[in-house]
Image (cartoon, rainbow, N blue to C red; front, side, top):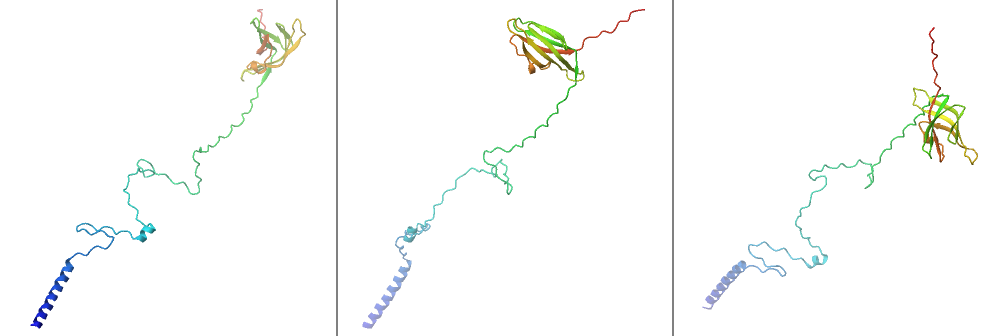
Amino acid sequence: MSQRRLLLAAASCLVLAAAAGAWAQNVPQPAPTGSAPTIPGTPPAPPAATPDQKKSGDQAPEEQPPTSQPVTGPGAAGQPPQQAPAEGAAAPAEGAASPVTPLPPLPPQPAVARTFEDMKIAVLGGLDKVTGRVSTVEIAVGQSGRFGQLTVAARACRKTTPIEEPESAAFLDIVEAKPDDPAAKVFTGWMFASSPALSAMEDPVYDVWVVDCKNPATKAPSSKPQ
């Protein structure tokens, strides 16, 4: 009897051990310390950082969502691509104007010599600034004429040829004789008909200028009938 009971007890122990092993295989294992429990049907959580990683600060940066930026530069729509400057060429300074090539100077114009002919009569104009009277005086070369208190002597009178630009010039000596003062020369030199202000007489009362130079008119001898 005692042996039979021992055998039955040993068999019961074997059955219980086998059942306990099968039950241990089906029971889920507990998660390690510091990790989140696993939920069936969900992806596993990322592993927690170790103390060494926290000290070193090696944490992966968070991904930022992409933002829409305006497209600029040569690839933008409607803008032609820019060409790169040639190698060795100096880049222009910002805000500096582009160099301008100066024009060459004009060559000097040669002075055109005029041909003057001597005339025998100087035709002069005179103005009395007090009375406003304007007079025309003809004075033969080498002689003198009077205009108010002025005595005008014509030393020469010349005129350009008909094929050239018209110009008349007279060399005059002008003396003013006032009643209470001695005679004084107020002008001497050339006067030009085309440019009176070029060489003008300065006087508070009178003004004189050249009008023309001419020769005396000559009449052809009349033929008497026989």
